Every structure is written in C-alpha cells, then in structure tokens.
Length: 160
Image (cartoon, rainbow, N blue to C red; front, side, top):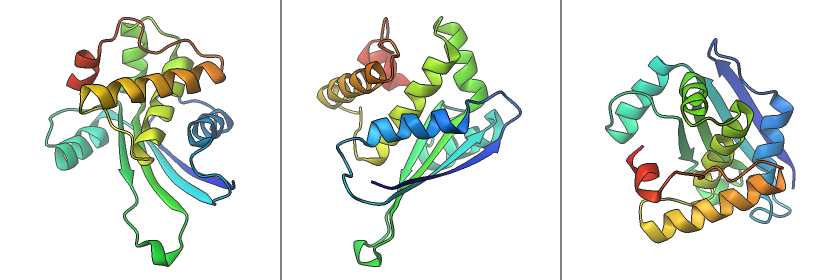
C-alpha cells in the first residue's frame, strides 16, 4: 500500500511529528486497504476553526477533538482519496491533561480514531462502539500505547 498524508497545521498548539502521524495512520489502515494507493488529508486546527466545523457538520456547539470526512468521490474516478481528518490541537492537549494521559498517546488515539471513521467504523450504537474501541486498543497496543479507554465508558465516549 502506498500512503500519502497531506498534513496542514493551522494551530499554534504543539503537535506531533509528521512521521509519527503517518505511522499512526498507517497502523490504523493495516489490513484494510491492502495494495491500494491511499491518500488522506489531515488538518490540525485551533478551537475556533473546529467549533465552526462541529457546528456546521454535526450541529453541535463548541470544538470537539476529531472529525472525519470520508471521501464520497465516485469509484469510477479511481482517485485514492480516503477522506479528510481534522484534529483540534488544544482540545487534544486539554483532554490528555484532564485524563492524565501522555499527550503523545492521546494524539495517537485521536489519529487512529479519525482514520477508522474514514474506513466506515462508528460508535453510535453500543455494539459498534465496543468493536471500534477494541480495534483502537489493538492498534494502539501494536504501537506500544496503553488502552485509551481506561475509565472511559461507551456512554461517556458517545456524549462527546
């Protein structure tokens, strides 16, 4: 698989190294797009930009940690764009502090989480959430990160 990740940084908050981001996305894609070219755009934003996107696309006020926008290009175009991921750097930093997690581990989690949404995974229903959380945990373990859902319940996760 050939992976291209276009990373745009529009936040003054510290963000992970681009090589780490690409490695986390690659780990999330493992076994899903074997042999296929894949392109993802990732934008790292501030609270204001994310709040606008969250309001426009989800009808929810304020910023959220990550949003994913799967590509809806017709397959006959043959373009490798899987979609776009937007991560709010200040929200990720604040959540990591609140949850007593290493910032790098939380960044890896949000990157994997956003990538899985591009692949069609969701957490609206409890069974879907459990499956997605289990997959995230396996992917993060393969990257030497701890389980991201230590005290987080499915209900708390879905409320975000």
